[in-house]
Length: 88
Image (cartoon, rainbow, N blue to C red; front, side):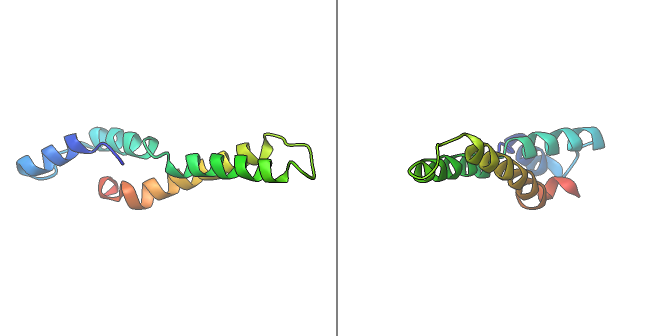
């Protein structure tokens, strides 16, 4: 869940009155507040590592890979879906 209360308050008070610098700052905050897919990738990678531990010695690479893919997914999801109103 993102923290867009300051943006919502400004929009309720009289429309969208953000300067380009403020919009860029709010978009950055919104995108960087996304964490769901990173957490899911880390947990999924850890689960995969544990399940695979019976055949191969467990390593941290599946968990790190899941976190990396999840982080990329968070940036894309945040930019195109969650923070789309700030891009215009």
